[in-house]
Structure formats: structure tokens, C-alpha cells
Image (tube, rainbow, N blue to C red; front, side, top):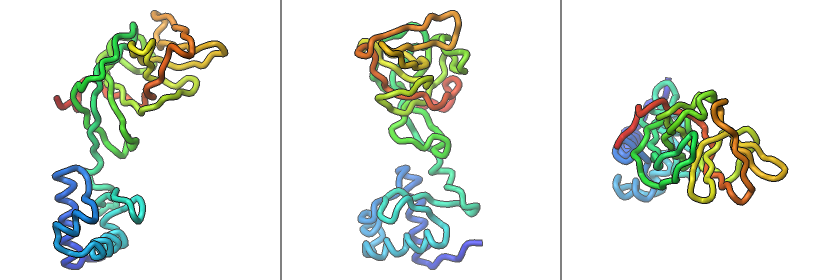
Length: 211
């Protein structure tokens, strides 16, 4: 059982919870001090006490990133969610023009997808179905400018056509291989392909979309 909080500690914790609920992120020490009308040092000391009593968890002593913990010690449900942009569309089949446009947003569990600057792409076509990537799926992507053999990547071809394929490095070029025998692997020169990201997960269909 966690230790009881003092009145001031409870006040700061309630303030943190409200800020996270309203904005999705905890406030800076300077902002918290101003809004609570206490000193910067008092905020820092209270945060340390809250952490010692297992009400919050911080990534580092001076990091703004902190997590509010539930009674079980798990991160509060509100902070386990993160919103990522859905960027245009990607064709899993014949590449189509890579439109860098906002296509809505997707809410994810941050404990499952902890990476930074993630984005999602809507799949069109069936060329990756044997890898479990189906038409209309949302591919969760980690931004990358490199790839390792056999990774499933988002590749920009000739600087204008984007596609999702399995990556293979060849002695004289790059192979982008579909996961469907009805489609043919394509070979490109090193200067014809720009890696945009690695596919790290799939959300089936439009669930979780917010326009």
C-alpha cells in the first residue's frame, strides 16, 4: 500500500492529473510553479516525494516526461494513449504518388507503441497479404532513413511513388519484395529508393480513426 500524501502533495498530484487530461502532457516545472503559486524548488521537491511514494514515475531527474501511476503501479490509462497522424495513402501493390497530406489521426496504446514521431499509412491492395497486411489496414510506421534485410519498410521510389514492401539489399541494388506470389519483386538502383520508415504494427481497418 502506498504512503498517504500530504495536502500539498495531493494538490500537486491533482493538478498534474488535470493537466494531462486537458493537454495530454505534463506541465513544465516553471508552468506548474506559476499556476500553483509556489516556488520552482517546491514543485521539484513535491515531484520527488510523489515519485518516492510511487504516485508518479519520471524518465530522468530533469526530464519533463513523467507518468502518473495507478494504485497497481501501472501507468494511468489516460497516459497510455497517444495520437499519431495518418499520412496520405500507401499502395501495397503498384506504387502510387506519396501524398504528404493529413488523413486523420489514430489513437494507439503508448505502452505498445512507445516510439517517437510515429505515423500511420493506409494500405491499398493485396501484395503484402501473406505478411498479414491487408487492403485498408493502417500500417504503424517508425520514421527511418535506413533498412535492414527482410524488414518491411515504407519506400519512396523515384522520389514520388511510395510503397510498402519487404526490403533486401543486393550487391548492385535494392529488391522490394511483395508477400504475395501474384506480385513480382522489383529491383531498383541505390539512387532510386529512399527509405521513409519501418512498419512496426498493423491496425485492421478504420478502427480508432478520428477525422
